[in-house]
Length: 100
Image (cartoon, rainbow, N blue to C red; front, side, top):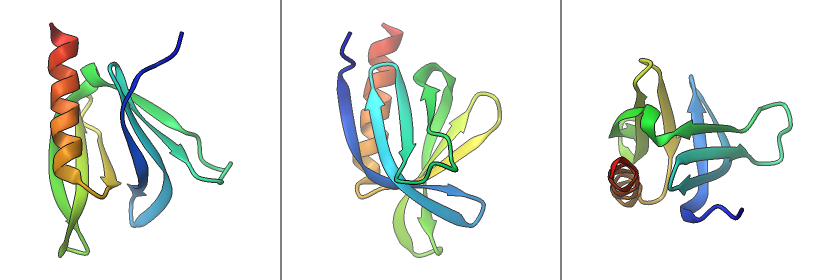
């Protein structure tokens, strides 16, 4: 069964003060991140149902390219993306479609 990708782009996942490059993908059920050429880090996926809120942040406190996923577990995941507004809207649209 082929999974429909709603949005994808090269992005960075920020863990602490370290940003690691990879590919961010949004499907109808989840958002996933695959680390680029670095086998030391496991790719991961977050179910849309586990996302409580999506918000923005500024990298280096000045660059408006950060996207934060607040999870229902209390955890947060941070990404650096090109068009954070489009990502936020796409995630909200996918979550709404999944809830129907």
